[in-house]
Image (cartoon, rainbow, N blue to C red; front, side, top):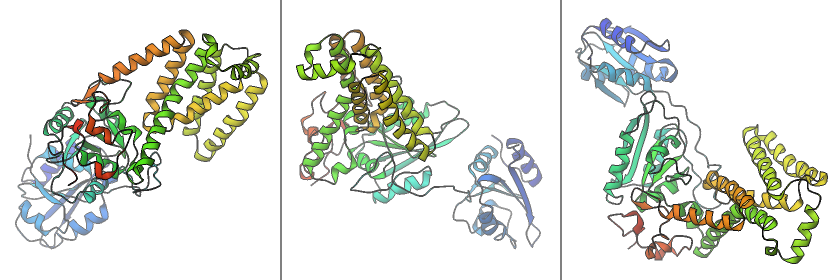
Length: 477
């Protein structure tokens, strides 16, 4: 590892060899007392106005010693440090922090004048709450850590940063409460981050693959949220959180499947209302996955499952349909998925119009033309709405719905039952960071059932979840 030399020109040339890109600029100036300086900075991500105010103007009359510590004292920037290593200086320039070189130096001075591009803090569109905080994480790392720090006014909050990605060197912060989060889980998270060898980390979702014990599992094993209040509430229960620079989505581990049936609003409304909405979300998800499959299985293999009046209605509606029941349902489902993808990726107002046209015009026309039946349209529409009752599981449940539909069309109700048994077996045998995925139901943890699908009043939640193995379980005196 090479260090800076006392010769200004040699050091500047050595640094430019490490950073040959055209947007890495140098600016030389001389103080009124004749001392030569040179700033090396990345043009797009350096605030040149601050650089002029806090560095160039501050050193315009410098007449002190050619030592980095003395020069740093003269600067008006609150973020300065000395660094002798050329490789470390190159990394600072790429982060947006200018490097100050001068004749006879023993080390260079790094100045924190990076240009920060951020959007305003707003409510996440994927997690809207009627009651409770409306803030959401954004893409700026420092803003996100400040949102967390503002909620924990304690020295027990630990925010430990590291760089992940050989070329992107993305900053990742491991957040936890010392004395509440289990030390073994914290060390395991840090170890897994250190073992990641990848060139580029554009988003926090890349880390979920490396943090999961079963990376190719259909069921996710890392929790996600865009709301600081939810993130901090999970830290207070004993979880470990991760904030990734450039991503508005925070990660939390260990993850429990029950988390996605809960909402931040559940803790700001009466317990009976929270219990009702959680059970409603579970019911909507089960109906969304199984309703199309049971409809097909009943038509093909078990007509007696339909009440007689409903059977007569369905028989009349499907009499002239040219497709088999399974092919008809699959066709409607694929059309719904295509419309969903198109409406998401098209311009906002065009997408809204497209969804209305697809739902009304295409559906009505297809029924009138005799391509599909009215029950098929109703069932797929209700199933699609049910999936969005638990938005964090849409990717997994949409695949399960399709799989159940194919199984029902080929095997019938027996296939659905066997597939369900396999899914349950898979869920109860999955764990991550030593925590079972479907706890507190498998295994049954009696004390944790107070805040599962059924929510007790706040006064009854005196201890942290036993499943998370926190060394300090008491949270309410």
